[in-house]
Image 1: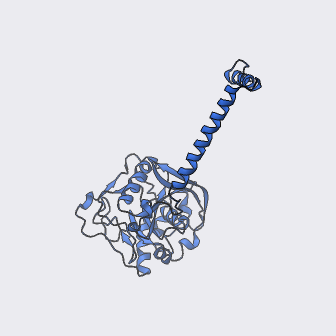
Image 2: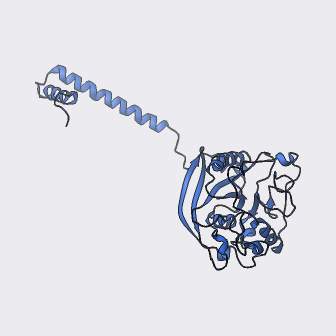
Image 3: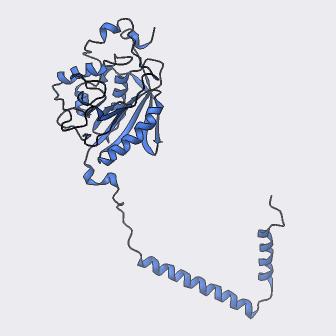
Length: 306
């Protein structure tokens, strides 16, 4: 409760004494003067309102609404689990990199939160299905690989899949059938391949199987040309000494890892989205999709480590 000694109460009492007194010429003069000033102020506001320019219903043109950015929008799909240090670098870096190139985009971090081994291919499948109708092509993008050369093309790959992290440029992998790291595809091309196989739990081999899918779908693979920075075109920020990869081969996984999966992919993907959050990382926006994958342990018992 406020004390009765506070000023608002005292001001109120003084105001009552002023109004309750006898009506004098001095008081009438003050009241008329106040009314005149209020009228003049209201008149000024009315005139200035009439002189103001008409309101425009169309919003001002924002950078991303600029036609020079083109009609296409990229979904940057980042398969992810517990590599937060790399994510803190990746999101603001890629957001700025793509903005400089005027590439409409949104970054989707597909975070695997189940108890199974990491499955990069299935997470990319999830990202494709969860990317929304506002995007028409995707980048399968490793979180630990940053493009350093601004001449690299991230534009719409209408003619066929575009392997940004070409084996001639990638700092680690140089065999000619390699399509990992960073690969751009239209959504239609990805659907044509039935996505990626869900059989690959642990690290590696899913890209090699996807290369066969591209060939089976008769899609022509394109790679960068005219890039002179060689193996310094990308920065690989993964430290294998600090965070080892899950390269174990369990049970029949040793034999199955080299086989083509003729049926699996988008058609047999099973997952649950636990949460979807819009966050800022270093001031750059991204969407984190916390995902629980399902594993058919009869078909792929190696989804669990023995």
